Image (cartoon, rainbow, N blue to C red):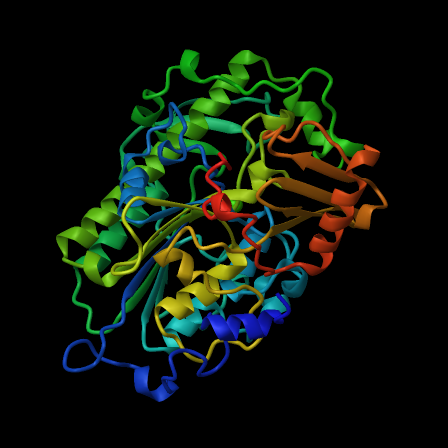
Length: 488
Ligand SMILES: [Ca+2]
């Protein structure tokens, strides 16, 4: 194919962002459009971001973790097997998908850098909804924080519902004997609404019960399963320790140059005994099921108020998370465990029920996709992802060749490109090492093939893809490749 990316997208009718780019509608024709009459009714959006949630979910095939409400959403819409975050840390990931810029363009690579110090004045996703006549409401953690950490023009209304003092009591312990203060669990007293996330769900349901004379963008930022691992005790009771099986790491495996996994913190995890590992898993699972229950309340609120037919539901984790894979119990890597996040979308009238998409989408695509779905105008011209609306209608459409992720260790960047089969990683542009993993032979990414000469051509191809291939579409290899379900 000799078309440039932009030509291809134009020919395909794919949303590129930019003022007036959608459906030929002028900005004024859809601003503040009331429901009813002859005007097309714009869909509401419930945008649910879950902190540090990986794909350890029932609907992603986990044998133990109970997530009936996310599973039910997956049955209503499309579940993405290859949704790739662009940075496996809260603030960089959120700053990226809320602006539609890749991390190299936001310049936000850690949790300390404030959003407004880098991106003040930028039209963010919620602000664009607001400018297009939506009522925008935030509950919980959507940007990385409040104040200087978020777009002050994004929300009509915002809140950070907290928990109660009872919800901070209970049984628990620090699994590192205090070496890492965050690494603790608490099977808490009280019930869901004694926790912040339970309160977020309750306030979301209150909002859904109100009268809405304009479409709404309701953004819910649930805090769990982010550490510390606190949930009402009954969620811990669902997971007997003997059922929580830590992953096996091949004997002798070591991180590349203390970069693929940071050795300092890993040394603390290396002190874990079997009990510690099982407790870590139990607490993450408990928090996941707890958050799932809160999502169930929100969906019930939509159903009770007859809003399902008019509301797009989007649920995702802000990045992946290791649960012992690579002897690591955290985020901030460029392995698949961090790169791949759950993503479920229900778009009334568009998504087929219960379908799975194996194609690669990236979080930087969220902004143009939602702008496309809701016919928003006035989006920034320089969005760096593309709308994947076509995949929501037909999840088997051949799509992006690759997803991209990066992290920063001190002054060194690690960057990875992920295709349907390969992951290729460069540390400090390759000066501090490279990694190559073949998912067909090594789905858990333990055997680095980068130094084997027989892979030189593959590496050359992936190196080029890493540096120049963003948003490139893959070519179907043959008829049997139309739906790469081999990618399990
Ligand atoms: Ca996070």
